[in-house]
Image 1: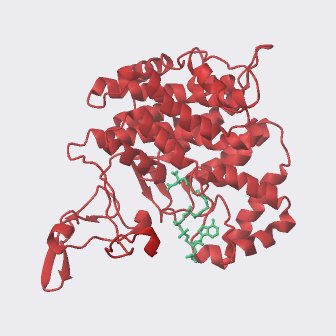
Image 2 (image 1 turned 180 degrees about the vertical axis):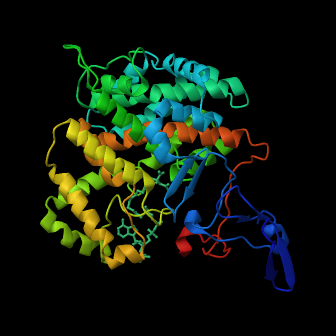
Image 3 (image 1 turned 135 degrees about the vertical axis):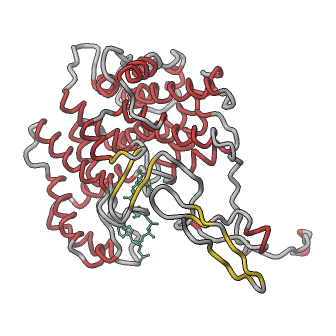
Length: 428
Ligand code: SDX
């Protein structure tokens, strides 16, 4: 049990309660600080601020550890599959065989989208970025599924959750098909979740499509790696949107929007473009110098992390998966992989990156793998969002079911103009 923390404010000595977690840093409860001192705390970017209590995911950034409901990510990626991980994140325990069969059935029964969604897609330009389509179409689900938007009803919350987990792959595949002018492919429910997604993306009506089990397994593992990650920017967005009572589809659409940013889920697309821009190993020193130059906004995309100050454990598994996929596809020497591996080697031996504890994160290798599988760069973040949907939903569900839940409403340090009177136009 941690000792209380005291804070001296003017002539006051405040004893602040410290709360301990199961593992990881304790927290100082400052909920009453404003009432007692008339002051706020100040922490832009929330580098030292816990926004909530959660039982879902834990990251030890110094040790490079990631646990989903206590299970290490490498064990789940090795022995489990994505739908099992979805069950674990949502319910807190690994499913037994009966629970697994029931969950698979419930997800499978929701893979189709309302037929009128097809018309919704017609409104987009063919060259619309898939993430713009995903933000819009996930939000639009609330226009089709009014019967699962009452967040006070546990049953409706679960149906909405199932619908989003089940329909996100269908919508993402539709976004891809629409962008290349091919007909949409309906889900085929005798396939597993990820094989179904691959078929909806790459099957064409003119011939039989056979799912490559090695690629399906690799993509399923990639989904496991991306499923949840504590209170990252997009998850915090979903929690904040949900705290106002917004319907679950709107909250997940808000998460999709936030994930799109290149500093967050958009980094996989940005990292691949960066590797393509670097092009050859001999150009790497120039880009390393740019990344270190304070006056140059260039950053090594796929490097660095707010929490991981050690290797992102997901990046290691991602790297292994990259080699598996390239081997399966007979891609012997991928110039992008050569650049990536040399860039990683140089960066990890460079004092700048060592001092700032900048390691490859999950986005550094994922792009190479997804490109080899046949996905265009523009689809990379949509795939990240597909996997993260279950994490967003699990975190949203935890917040909604928290009896102490209230609307999120941060305060600020105001440094604008003091109060002043209006000046008529002719006197300005
Ligand atoms: C994801 O939060 C999550 O959990 C996210 C995520 C998830 O699963 O949800 O893990 C997914 O978003 C992974 C991160 C993907 N983003 C990128 O790869 C983009 C490149 N990385 C950076 O933009 C940056 O590292 C962040 C945004 C990831 C983290 O930024 P922080 O924690 O705010 O750190 P910072 O920007 O304050 O950087 C600390 C220092 C700075 O130097 P100083 O100002 O102290 O001199 O490190 C430097 C930065 O300039 N730095 C980099 C760098 N990242 C940080 N320098 C060069 N290249 C980089 N990539």
